[in-house]
Image (cartoon, rainbow, N blue to C red; front, top):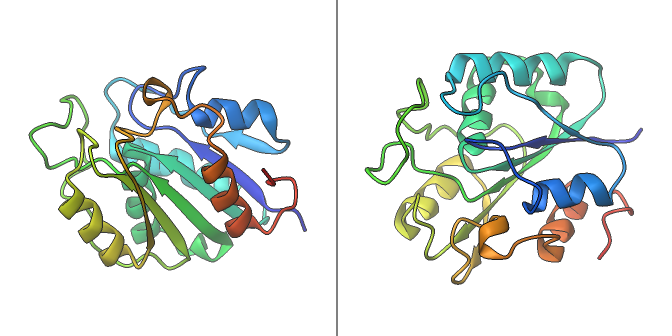
Length: 184
């Protein structure tokens, strides 16, 4: 059975230069979970949308999240029992929605979840991300039961910081999916 890979952008969606967009063009079978409101999201709406997409069929999924979508995954996992369909999650640049540096306009994404995820996960964090301190990124990874991968001077790990096709991330997706197409 093929694993479905769900692309979960964060606040404002992921633009054309973002690694999530590169991967959608480069690999087959990736599905971006489109949210109704990318600018002023409400957590409950995003959680419901994610659940609808996961529940659309019985396939196993790997969740590939950036920024606010990392928080989305933790919220979804707290509320839905179909997390058994999730083979794993790649949580890149988790934003600290409780931090003063976090952009205003979101609703329901605080407090940050510190519950262990019921599936394997990998957190990728940068030592100079403007939206999460290294200490908080490490605390989130530990609380979620995630493997932690550090990048140095990678900012928010997006298109603006040079993370276009991002081969290291592709390798992490291969580890979670077991799919040979994710070979760099």
